[in-house]
Image 1: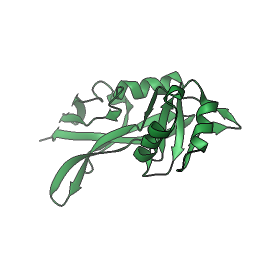
Image 2: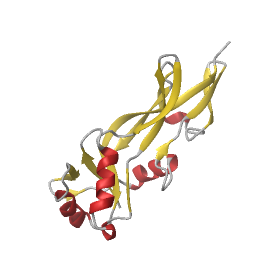
Image 3: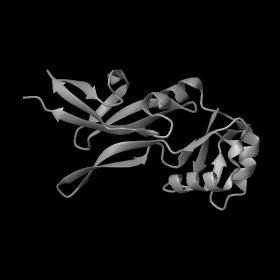
Length: 170
């Protein structure tokens, strides 16, 4: 089961490395920070960078959440397994399926997608968003991002992912 771990924002990768170094590997199958590839502009130059998909959170696949929580409590950095009234809530099958549809084990990154505009309609032609246009809530062409609406842990979140428009309308 996948569980969400709250960590200090900006320290997601460091917290995941700390878990991999100091927590007994028999307590978890995978620890990862879901990431997204996005275009970033510096001056007149665009480059692709990776950033956390959910800042301040990472995911751990474990069958032993109570033992994992005890191990996290012994870490020198802040890392707290999310719970509600002491009950650990795993991601549900739909949430896991969403992350698995856009990423894969060993590469938990939502890669950039590419789109064309034809007759005023955006059609995604390459990347993880192909065929998932219905999930796109809005597009920010200036920042080269698509905003998806995702339900995670019972809340609706707007999640920006990379989307580059290859052709503009004429």
